[in-house]
Image 1 (cartoon, helix red, strand yellow):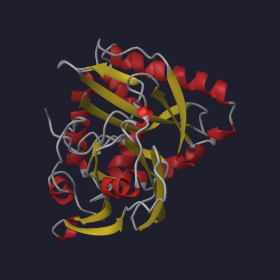
Image 2: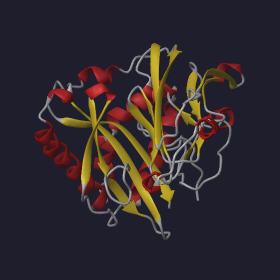
Image 3: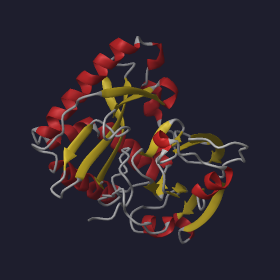
Length: 312
């Protein structure tokens, strides 16, 4: 199994190589080692270090960084793609007791232990990839047991870029939710068909804008951009003819109403609906896609995509 070098977020963090991860994987390399191999230094990189062994969801600026409602998630992750510009950034993290349906509850000590070693960090490519802690993520004390818990933090970031693509996003929270879901499903069906038919080049065009944001925010030079896009082509080639049905779905608002995603509601609740069956038993190629609706064209486009190979 290939190592997950930077979970595609296209925002893809598909790896900054080929990233492929799995739910049961062990802790990956340190943040500094991972990025020394894959990025060019033109500014600070911000990262999230975590190893959470219970069902959870992590968001930066109301965008999904990592989500697994089956088990846990392991980092680190580069998060520059979620940082639109310098200033205050938001982090939210929800954890769910693995046996909540049977009455499982977290007490104060259990909650505290879940986030051991969870930090927002900076990586300085110009300074021998030195890592510095910006924010330690620690849950506050609770007085009673709970089946789930969510908390929010803030941190300040200083980056030499602005992701202007978000300025083109309409406020989708003002739309009729039922009609909006119909429109979003149609866009997802279009993307599903591209992957199912093996039309990788057309799919790559769909993620071109999000790739550009990734390259800008992660300081990729031309060689790194070329390497990265080729790895993506290889990843999406594996989807041909094995896409899983788009059955029951849930519309989720992101980016404070400027983005939307379709999530699974069945066995793989919380995962993106564009899933392909892996060649190994109990494996999947997953894609969590965030859409925006353009002010200029009044059409949907992929703003972020988080693709990952998983075993379950």
